[in-house]
Structures are given as C-alpha cells and as structure tokens.
Image (tube, rainbow, N blue to C red; front, side, top):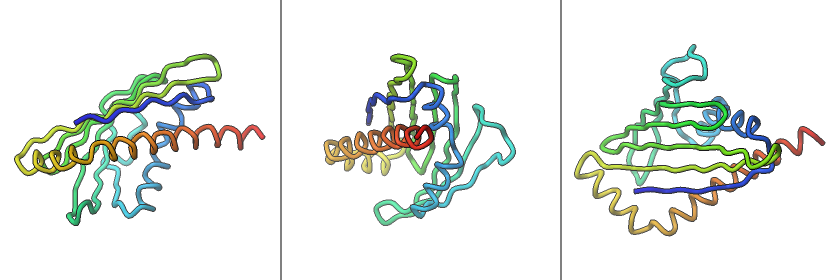
Length: 156
C-alpha cells in the first residue's frame, strides 16, 4: 500500500532539509501525542544508521515500531525503513530546488505485510484508502506550511 504527496514550499532547500532532519523536534512532537519514543543510538550523529524504537496505541492494540534512517543525501533525500509486528515500511522524502527560494518536497510511504494478520490489517486500511490519503496529504501540507511559517517568523 502506498501513500504519496508533493508540496511546494517557499523556503530554500537547505532550510527545508534542516527542518526534516530536526529529529529532536519530531521526537518531542510524538511524545506530546502519547507515543513512547527512544533513540537506540543516543550519541550517534545525524547520519544513516540512526534508529528509534517507538510504542503507541492503534486500533486498541499496542504497536511497537523500529525505525531506521537508512539513506541520507543532504540536502536532497532521506529514506527511513520501519518494522512493526508483521509490517514493513519505507518512507522516502525527496527535495528538489525549484528556485533559490522555493523547494518541492515529495514524500512516499510504502507499507508491506509480512504476516497474514498484517495483510488483513492492510486490507482494512485499503477500504479507507481515500480518507487516509486525504489525511496523509493534509498532514504533509500542514508540515510544509509550518516550515514556511517558521521562516516567516524568523525573518520578521
């Protein structure tokens, strides 16, 4: 199952990359939403191999997730691989400089089952794919807007 979204951001590519690589901010945001998050490699620099363990409630069950930054080419691309009980995921974030002050951010998330129960779970998600896709695109758009707003606040 795949979700994808593209957003154009009125911010230089280096600043967008800095925002998407601010992992401490993402950790704090997840914790505020009730997710238990912990870095596996506390002292490691921002580089491929960084990893996190997370636990959260989804559909009434506790889910454990292991997330690894598998690829990073600054300032153009990041790729994350995740593994949860029966599900694997790959999320790719690509940045393209449209001009010195404008960046296109493309995010693609692929989920694949490893077990029968995960296959059933994904099948239930497919039934709601339209609404899930809308929510995914909305969250990406909100994130892009927040990057623009931070830049406006800093330069004002």
